[in-house]
Image (cartoon, rainbow, N blue to C red; front, side):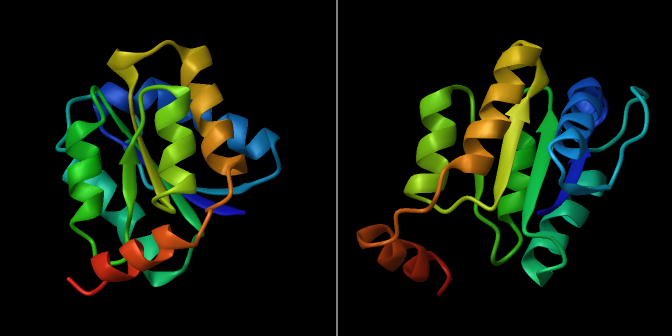
Length: 143
């Protein structure tokens, strides 16, 4: 799978960890930055991930920050992106099953490394259920 990843400075450490994990799993990863823990403005690195997903250049996107909130908001401003802010296993599973989330947002300050990697695996492996959920996604896409 082709996956774009991006973070601000507060998510940089987990971005590097998740990027390597995705590569180890055999995915093709495009790193949109940032490339250090020097303070930056997150929209500069999150929007390119979301735009790559929306254009179909990649199948999924991973965005990270301190809480993941701003990153999810920034990604969701791009038409065609469904970014799920995930903080536990159930939120990652439901983000895919019910919302067909094509972007996951994770807050580095909100969880340990093991949890972050587990959420990524769940999000990657969980299929979209379709059915009644598809109608709702189609409604979202009209906005």
